[in-house]
Length: 345
Image (cartoon, rainbow, N blue to C red; front, side, top):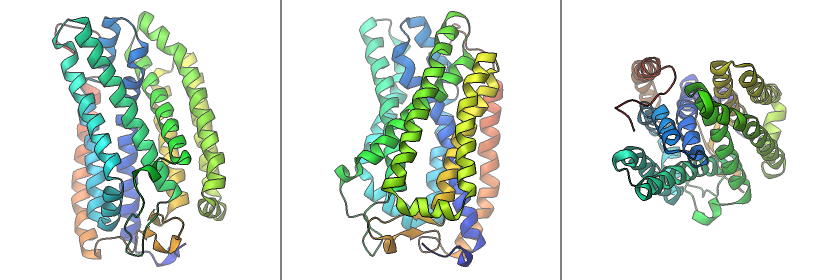
C-alpha cells in the first residue's frame, strides 16, 4: 500500500472527481436500467408504455455522465484508462451492444402496433438493461478484487478470468440495486393501480438488495484482505457502511408513508455511500494488481503530468456545472406523474 502523505493534492481531487462522475452515472442511469429490468414484470401494453415514457425524456441525457466519467479518467489517469479499457475490452464491447439494443428498443417499440413487434423490443429492452447492469457490476467487482497486472501495469488475464464468483456476486447485487432504485423512481412517476403494483415490489427488492449486499461484504472479507486491512486503518469507512445499510432500510419506511421523493433521494444516497465506501477502502489505488500488489496503478504512478491535471481541472470546473445544470433542468421540466398523451413512446 502506498503512503498517502506523498500524494499531490490535484491527484486526490481528480480521484474524487472521477468518483463523483461515475457515482452520478450510477444514480441516473441506474434507475433507468432498473425500469428496464422490471419492464417485463408489467403485463399491460399501456403500462409498459408508461414505464418507457417515465424515462423517455431523460435516459439518453443520463448516459452523458458515463462519457464525462470515462473522459475524466482518460484525462487524469491515462495509464489506468488504458489498462481498464484494454483489459475489459470484450466486456465493454458487450456492454456497448447491450446499451445500443436498449436504446433502439426504446425508440422502435411503439412504432408498430403488432404484438410480436412490441414483445420482441420489450425483451431487447429488458435484456439490454439487465446485461448492462450485470456487466457494470462485474467490472466493479474485478476492480474491487484486483486484476492480474504485469510490471508495466498491463492486464494479463482473459475474459473468463473476469467472470469469477466474487465479481459475478457484485454483478447480481448491482442488478438488484438498480431494480430497487428503478422501482422507487416508478413509484414517484406512476399513479393508480400501476403504482400500487410497483409499491408492492419495493420491500422485496430492498430485501433482495440487502441480502446480496451483506453477502458481498462477507465475501470481501475473504477475497480482499488488503481492502479490509485498509478499512480497519480507516475506521470511519465502517461508519459510512453502517449509514449505507441504514439508508437502504429507510427507503421502505418512506415508501410506506408516502414520501415518494424522499425514498428516491434515500435510494440515491445508498449509491453515494456505496461508492464512498469503495473510495475510502481503495484510495490511493485506481487499479489493484492481484496477486502482485506491487504492480498496482495508483493516483500517482498512473496520473497525467501536474500541468495537465491543472489545466483539466479548470476545464472540469467549467464543464461539470454545465452537465449538472442540464441534468437538473431536464428533471425539473419533466417532473410530475407520467401520463400517456398523443406524443410518446
